[in-house]
Image 1 (spheres, rainbow, N blue to C red):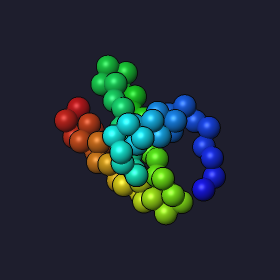
Image 2 (tube, rainbow, N blue to C red):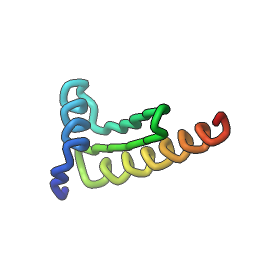
Image 3 (cartoon, rainbow, N blue to C red):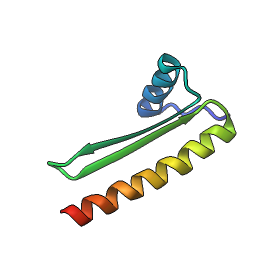
Image 4 (cartoon, one colour):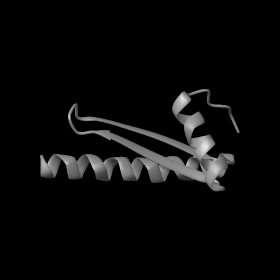
Length: 70
């Protein structure tokens, strides 16, 4: 698996280790500014790809909900 030096991905790696999970998806929201961020982690190449797919779906759902509720 390729190393991702992103600090957000490192945070996800840390959560995975602390919580004893192989995948982590984080959605961070700032309603005041409208900013949404996502980071994902998977312990293997396959788990990483699956976490990204799940993260993308969750991110899209959050964006839709925020647009619908204003």
